[in-house]
Image (spheres, rainbow, N blue to C red):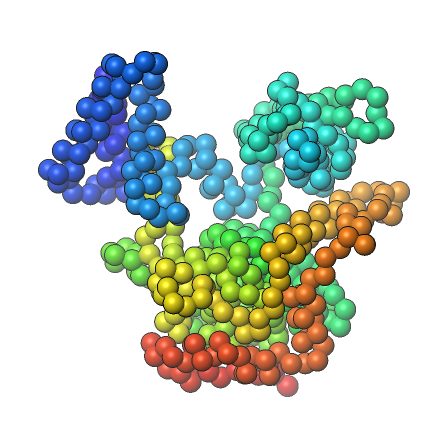
Length: 454
């Protein structure tokens, strides 16, 4: 097949959605001919040799960029596979968290039970080579990509350790590793704390298991932390909402251009924890499924929402698989909360983004960033210490006490719970007025605050 024919074939992929082919207008095919002509001219006249496949992918990405939608993208095969794996709740690799510090790739912590952990890799080890390739100046994304790969395949790390004279070599076999997307623990006064980093296929089951265990331990209230949670799958968000609402109620609806992208999602009616008071923490990096869950709970006055306005990503990104193994990710619909509110930032330019909290707590951007890193270090250090032997249990804290940043939002939430003011704060919320302005559902359904069962 000639190069130009391959290019035309690649461009026809834009008109394929699963097995349905969109109408091919004369105008569209005229434009494709123009692209074909340009490709052939470049192939013949450009000073350097080019690969038609590379040019075609570049042109495809250019077409997607012309949509001027920041969420749309063309994912090549490897990137799409990684995307699917993460949504399923796992990845294939060696199981360690690392970051670039002063141009060096430093191990933060190996995940307990993984190849890196079992091989004896330790926090603060410096990875100087991956399969013989120097990591000096290497972008973090490239380092992660090199450590990941196919299950059963080997990867060699060359590591420098502070108390070892010579570099150490570790030959590790990659395996499927469950993504850690949740941190949960019991605080004082019967308060359960759950931090959810993303919504994947395991999220709802993980939260249900944790809350079931904590109920046996005397859980009286819950803080669900969705700060910095950029979203993920919608079904886990609906399943989590179902845990806190006894009746079958509309959780969210989606509306797109075609009937294929119009749907209503309802809670299951199970309501295993419908008698539990809880607070949801949000910030400007809470997006998509995070906003659906917190918005639905706010509409039904089921939880107190605290923090600052969310990101405002109220659109559905639909990955459309292509025959070459890649995928076209397109914005296909918008989310609408039970009250009829759209949470998308572009729908009302005069309003604040996303979900407006019931209780606003201001945090500086600098403190937000420091808190994010602090929480990550503490949670990973906790996991490491729990899995190590007794001799390591007194290991120094991941964050020095004098350098810790106060978590004002979390502390405020704990204070409200201790003062037994969740219901009072929900009832007096300014966000209530925003909800009441919508008439798409009966106001009585959304305006009755949660009342704890006696």
